[in-house]
Figure 1 (cartoon, helix red, strand yellow):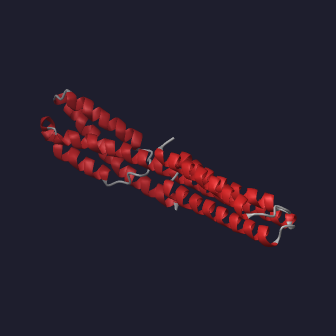
Figure 2: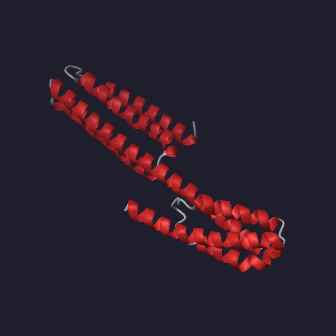
Figure 3: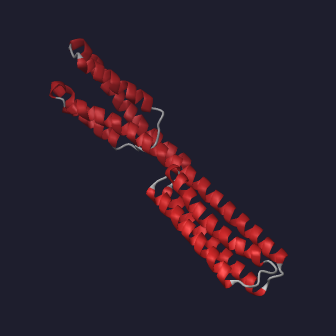
Length: 232
């Protein structure tokens, strides 16, 4: 348990003890639904701080901004509304068991469903962003490999072509997987291997592979554009 979670837990325990003490000191008449409503006040605080601890656990695997802002708001609203309504019932409607229970069930269901919806959406966005970051990292790695070859003085004869291909690939849509990516990766690997033992014969292979790589990068531009349009 991290420091943040420990602080939340400690704050929750202190507030629960303080609330229980205040209820015992301030309430003299425990008839009607006073006990039930008092228990609901304590439950609201448990749900609030328990929810905060739950958020700490799930935030790392969801889109944190959405998870924290939405769940914090819903938990706060649930606790405040529940506590205020419980106090009103204790004060004015001690015998209204049915309406109090109906209110509790409806409020809990609404908040629980809302939290589930937000968590599901947050999880989906997190997965999409993770996939995008993975794709960007993969394509960027290919760009870096081409750039590294271009900067190697031993391959000065192909430097300008490699640099151009590196820039062309960099300015494609790095966030989208394209069908050509595997072939681009394969072509870069071939170039690296051939340049590793460059001679007259391998030089021709490098040239032809560079031409093929240029074609693949141009195809990637078209593919990623089509994929984006399809998503829209």
